[in-house]
Length: 585
Image 1 (cartoon, helix red, strand yellow):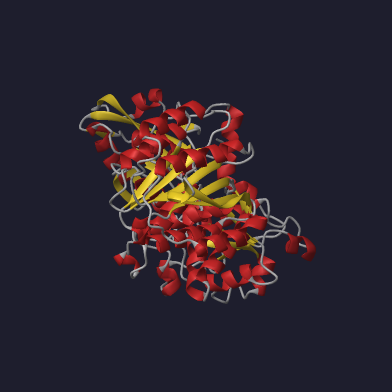
Image 2 (cartoon, helix red, strand yellow):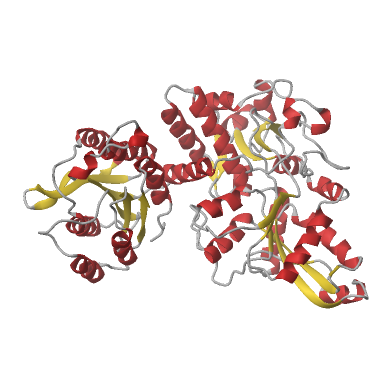
């Protein structure tokens, strides 16, 4: 978090007041002043609530205040604009709860939280994540940028100088090599599930790792692990890890690189630290913060009209000069009077390839939502821990070939997804493995392959068991297996972990000798213990899966059911399912 953000947040705590989104509300004009200053021709009042990323809020508030002084009105009705300086992750939690979305790492919104009429987060990726997180009816209006801040790699100047800054143009691939070598650069990141600049840096770094390595998965995971050791949930905590003294020992032991916004670096250096930060504009340029103006769905027509006029106020030519003192650029990447650009900062007015990277378009306009989702879920899995029993269907139908997977069978695709997931789990995880069909181990429908245990000793046995897994000629003994797996995890429940069962299947229960659905649900209801919860994640593959059957189970146990007709999608679903488990359950 930048110094500017920290000051506003400190003021919030000092005042002891929190708005619906957990931040101090700054009213543009107050109602009394508004009555005195609004156009004498308007009557009534439209109250428009606008939640704005903290660093941008002063500019929006000032522009709205001047608009009110000039007589803000729509259709003869007076307008009052309430601007709240808001942490985007807090508003995202509120909007997600309203629209039924689940965002990995974001957590739950307070029960009293109220969604604003207009939201200006720091990045369009928040809007994108809400859509991919399950808010299918979430269609905000407008969405155009009103400000911009490039995402840079912040680096103590002594370290940056050794890499050729500011004369030499550096790349993300070069940073990957610095992070992953035998004497690695100490890199950090603000949790990318909760911070847009962190997410932008993570996308650039993992893309570079995949493009420059013969073992892309290995290098990508190595980069995730390296970043996680220096990660922070709050930006001010990350900034505190940079060197506080200029001596070589302190510089060497402190944080050496982190993805932050240009505004963060300027604000940090304005405090005259012992070791200033260089802003490295690495190529290809990271996705910038673009501050989209999102009119949220469901607001009444009068407010929507007021929101449209306010957008015009925030995009006139003079607004650029309101942004400059806040170390922010205009949407096209240019800056207004008073902007203090870091050394080497590109400007579109100067021309050239670097300059073209900082202006134009929306941050998420050309971004594949699947890439964002994969980055967020991979981070969540790689930096979390848990205790999990993985159960894989080996019934005869798993021999079916998958056209979209070059003829690989469902079994092979599923095992590959499990193996890829295993590579992300660090040694804090405890994992076990079963397989199931019908009468697979004597009368039992399931076979225990690897007992649940820490990956410090389980990784090789798990890899070997996955490699030996083959489809049987049996049917799908789903209900008996779910109950047995649930009891197994519950019996050795660990209070310090999220305890879960993750089961892959491509069919409905068709075991004539097993328990019925009614018996399974009744038994799960009887044995579940709120003090010892076990989350069940069921991943259905193909057209023969019954969504209702799976959901009936997870409605009791918690967790969730996920179904994909295309088996090639299960790797993404697996990671997403793990990332969305309720930590602290």
